[in-house]
Every structure is written in C-alpha cells, then in structure tokens.
Image 1 (cartoon, one colour):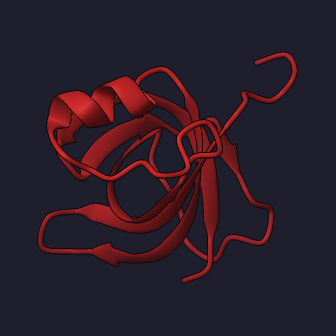
Image 2 (tube, helix red, strand yellow):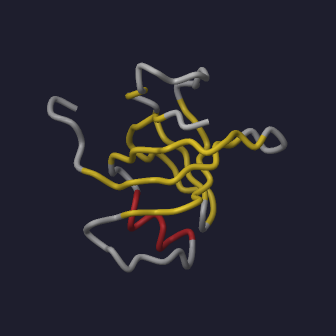
Image 3 (cartoon, rainbow, N blue to C red):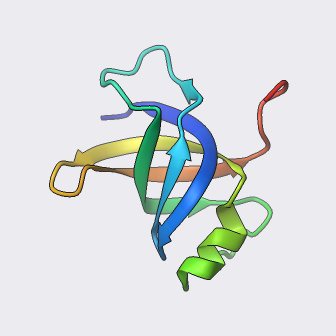
Length: 96
C-alpha cells in the first residue's frame, strides 16, 4: 500500500497489536481509514527505546500507550480487519 496514518495509541490488544485514534493521514493515501484502526506491528522504531523487543501486552502498553505513532501501512489483513504496519514512535505534532 505505502499509505501513511498517525495518531495516539488508545488501546493495546496483544503483544504485537494495538488501536490508534487516526488523527493524521497522508494526502496521497490511496485507501480510506476509519477514526480508529487496529494495527499489527510489522516493524517498530522507537528512538527512546531503540532496542525495544515485543515481550508482553504490558510491555507494549508501557512502550506505546498515549504516544503518537506514525504508521507506514504495508497492507490490510482482511480476515481480521487490521492494518499491518511499520510503526515509528514520535513526539506528538504541535498543537496536538
């Protein structure tokens, strides 16, 4: 896909899945996205914890809950209605 979305993590679901509140989308996205999206992590880049490895849902929650996440969408898994994404943990945009 190559689309990009972003927003705060609102709920951790498993050790590699969470939901975000979609507050930002790239202008050149080819697909439509809901107000919330379930994200399955393909790859994670967190400059605050560069050696972060998924371990438990609690570990993922500590690493991501409430943080602003940019997602590079790889594809939508239609069976579970989730986006498989490379994610990047960043500081929220100004005014967010």
